Amino acid sequence: MPLEYDVFISYGRADVDWAREVDRAVKQSAARYNVFFDVSSLRGGDDWEGRIQEALESSRHLVVLWSEQAKQSDWVSRELYTFISTAKPKTNTDRRLVVVNLQGMNQALKAFQQIHRTDVQQAYPDVRSLPPSTLQSIQRELEEGLDPLRRPLAVPLVVLTATLGDLQSLSPERQASLLADFGLSAADLLARYGAKREDWRPFGGATPMATILRELQDGLNRVLGPYRLEWRPPDDTFWTDVLAARDFVGQEFKTGQLAVLVIDPVAMYNPDIYQRLMLFHDCLANEKITIVALPPFAAPPELVSLRRALFRRTVPYFDDFFEPRVPPVRKVLAQCGWNAVDREDVHRLLLAAAGRLPGGAGEVTSAFVRQG
Image (cartoon, rainbow, N blue to C red):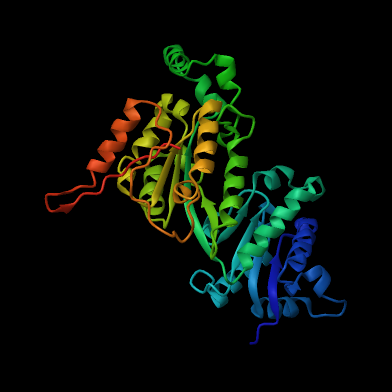
């Protein structure tokens, strides 16, 4: 059967207002997709069931609006099954399945492209409460997800941080040790956490981690060329079941083309979160994994000024360090510590360099963490 439509929109009946916004966004994208949206595509007197089935089978891509309403809809289940079985989007990159998560996430669809935004989930079910900037961002993400020239790049992401309850449950001795180590007051520290882990606000600022990650994703996708990066965090069992957490690390995190581990040093005072960190003990030897620890306080302004001045005054010497390109123009193998703050930093860099020297049965590669 020839493909008649570019995009088929699948949704639960109660989410029709959201479907209208998605229909508008896809039609207004640069590609000007031909969309099947039943409210606007069907006419009185049509054989609705037959027409929908025909349209689904002749659509190149499927966009699913996921919510509890969609979960309970027999039509959405049927449309998902039909498209996955006929288009085979998991292996056929010319056919895309994009899931817009309005409420929760369908874990069975994690292998496909996801648009998962905290601001959307907080606004649901009232689409009218979304600001125009969010709707524009959704339009851009849909356009990128459907672009046949951009390949989805699923990046497993784990943010090892705490909730406010996790920190408040620490013993008085641990709390005292934590505050002494970081030189912060209890009120100042606890103000940076909330009921959910994504509420964590690192760098001493007011921006929650969920927003930081979304902005990082948007920024990376502007420069990644043929790829469209999507974060793939673990589900809630990562925090409730240490065996499930171990399975995620071994089966998804370590096997990704890229993977990111974000560590909140404050959260390491919680024994359960520290135990999760131990599951990543051998990831330092994996060159596909990026590990970053984010401080609870802002960077000293002198170091920020140093970074800016060093970049400006040494162009183009440090271009590949400060602004890496994809694909790289040249591979930076030297150990770089542009803002080494003390002798320990220099010592670490020299040890990392020595670890790359040939020895024994061959060259030994040592993982290292570059400050900055």
